Image 1 (cartoon, rainbow, N blue to C red):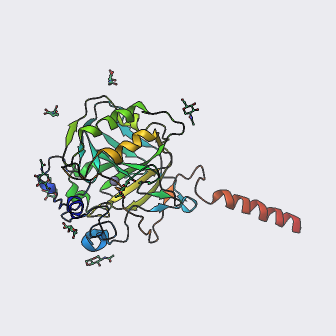
Image 2: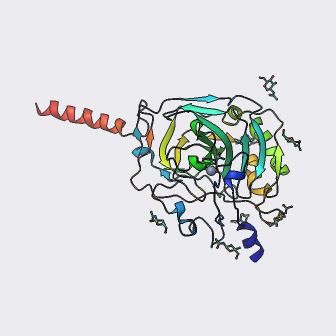
Image 3: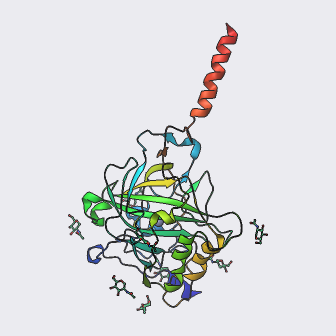
Length: 323
Ligand SMILES: *[C@@H]1O[C@H](CO)[C@@H](O)[C@H](O)[C@H]1NC(C)=O
Ligand SMILES: *[C@@H]1O[C@H](CO)[C@@H](O)[C@H](O)[C@H]1NC(C)=O
Ligand SMILES: *[C@@H]1O[C@H](CO)[C@@H](O)[C@H](O)[C@H]1NC(C)=O
Ligand SMILES: *[C@@H]1O[C@H](CO)[C@@H](O)[C@H](O)[C@H]1NC(C)=O
Ligand SMILES: *[C@@H]1O[C@H](CO)[C@@H](O)[C@H](O)[C@H]1NC(C)=O
Ligand SMILES: *[C@@H]1O[C@H](CO)[C@@H](O)[C@H](O)[C@H]1NC(C)=O
Ligand SMILES: *[C@@H]1O[C@H](CO)[C@@H](O)[C@H](O)[C@H]1NC(C)=O
Ligand SMILES: *[C@@H]1O[C@H](CO)[C@@H](O)[C@H](O)[C@H]1NC(C)=O
Ligand SMILES: [Zn+2]
């Protein structure tokens, strides 16, 4: 299928300086990359984009929950304008993902971040079919159907992504897993029904559509306890894979009905002739290389405090018995 190969490996040159609202997704990549053709799929990125996809702090990773270390600095976040129902301006088919641009003033702070970050956009990663899952991160080896990424840049950098990708904490990404809601209801929740209704208006690469229905980020993040998350230092998950991202991956999942998940891999295309569906839009798991994943300390969740408490009790008991 030479046509398919060509279509999915178009050279995307993103000239940061010339974009009004720089999109971090694929920032400054001048490399022809793709998700599933053998000469440009993610296994080739370390060789076709040696800056920086061959690095040692790459994303995504498999999060091993039992190895996550407690960190009392991982406090709750402050989300500004996440409840604003006019903060999503437009939705775009970028050929590699579907991305929603956010109005200025949407911000994230707290959560152990060193300063306030401006929220630029969110985009999604998905699989191909109800049994072909497409999250980027995995937890204890488990992959989820989809993953939503909200991309934020340090406010002090004035949305200059050239500077942001040179700073190990220039970007903060918020990752949310999406799962199929149990039961067989369709079109739920309403916020996701609204969001996915735009997909039919952006079926071709380059299509863009204004968002006019009043949905907020809070509406989309329904059901997620945003005080419980994993944190680690990583990279962009697309070339040039810059190691400039403080990752937050939330433990709770967003639950939407299967029919809405299905719309992603059956509606949008990677080309502008509606030839090839956009499917399996995720990078494979990268080695942690000794990086430590942290999480909230208090609950003891994910740390070994529960078992060490038990061990402590047992040795105390042994000590008492020996007396
Ligand atoms: C992959 O192959 C396609 C089709 O031959 C070509 O257009 C594309 O440039 C190639 N990509 C890379 C990174 O070599
Ligand atoms: C970003 O910062 C760099 C370095 O200071 C500067 O050269 C560039 O013009 C800035 N880009 C934008 C879009 O402001
Ligand atoms: C990545 O590739 C570049 C260019 O070939 C090389 O200089 C660098 O050492 C490589 N980095 C790693 C971690 O292998
Ligand atoms: C996606 O799934 C469809 C239906 O099962 C299949 O025909 C197609 O080859 C798959 N595409 C990829 C790229 O795996
Ligand atoms: C699915 O829908 C049918 C018909 O509305 C209902 O009888 C059944 O209990 C539902 N199953 C689940 C698992 O919700
Ligand atoms: C989309 O919004 C922009 C900016 O608000 C506006 O200029 C443009 O006309 C809108 N496009 C459509 C098709 O409504
Ligand atoms: C958007 O928010 C405003 C102010 O809170 C409210 O009056 C309006 O009804 C909301 N619109 C929708 C579509 O939810
Ligand atoms: C469609 O994509 C082709 C190849 O990338 C490009 O040359 C052409 O200008 C595009 N057409 C439209 C209408 O965007
Ligand atoms: Zn992403």
